[in-house]
Amino acid sequence: MSKVKLIDIIENPLSGEWGTDDDTGKGIPVLRTTNFTNEGIINYDSVVTRTIKKKNISEKYLVNGDIIIEKSGGSDKQPVGRVVYFDNEENKFLFNNFTGLLRVKDKSKWNPRFVFYSLYYNYQIGGTQRYQNKTTGLHNLKTDQYIKDFEIKDFQIQQQENIVVVLDRVLQLIQLQQQELEKLDELIKSRFVEMFGDSDYPILNWNDVFYTTTGKLDSNAMEEDGKYPFFTCAKEVSRINTYAFDEEALLLAGNNAAGKYDVKHYCGKFNAYQRTYVLTLKQDWSYVLFQHQLEDKLEYLQNQSLGGLTKYLTLKILGELEFIVPPVEIQSIFADFVAQIEKQKETVKKSLEKLETLKKSLMQEYFG
Image 1 (cartoon, rainbow, N blue to C red):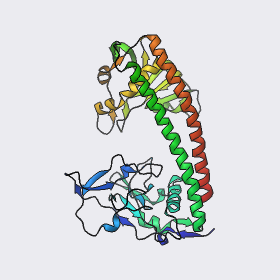
Image 2: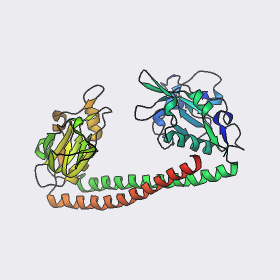
Image 3: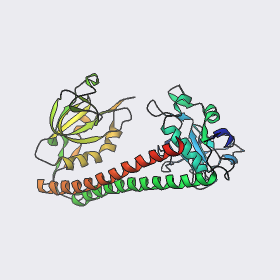
Image 4: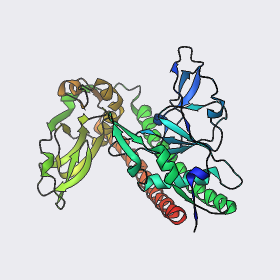
């Protein structure tokens, strides 16, 4: 099938605007790369407003069908060049100077969403990596060269529209499954508040609840083929041939560059990296109940983090945390409820995995 250069499909790419701080709250909403999601959808939860006095920017106000491309950003693990599709209120939003605007010239020949999906797929398979360079900690996209080189399959407009309908439907189903998982998580939180929100159950501090051990293994001990999980930042990253722990425990990440922490419940033989705290309960209590309480405190712990580039927690910070300790039979009721919800979540996750596989397969078929 023949292909067409992206530069022949779109108008001249436009650079974004940033302006100055908006002290009135009545400025222009400006989309940033922090509003990008890896699914190509714009997150409007934290859109900033800016004072922009520059003239002749009317063509930069976003309209339906616009594609915003990330020109600066990314990281060593996430290449620059993500794209998102705009389908919100027209002539209201601008985009910042770390992004660029791609606008289809002739919508009778090219469906903007088809063009977006082509760019989205190319990013997913690493197609922007050879167009990025790194300066002062940022990854910059050689946008002009990328636009000149990138080619899109020359489907007829009706074929493009049919492809968009299929992919949009799959994406919608994925979003519904993701929303279902969020609702199930909220159900657990609501149940916790219902059972323990206004209770008179005892409150104990960290040291009365947990025995606390820190992982001590060097990451160089990791091997390809082994027997037991190795946890770092409370996530399994590899396997090694020996183990240091053989018990049920909660694992709390204590070393994270972003200051974000995670909790994992694990039972069995495992190892843990330094500053991953291994927590065992001092009495025969429900790990599920205390996992939920600890997860509820993660945002607080993030705000209490110490350190500069690498954030970390200390035993002093953790020791100030307090936990509700209801009778064991009440703990079991909550744990049983959570177990039922987790079964539902597993069903949803399997469905979500199938949909993600379908999406990748379809994109490979259409754009590969």
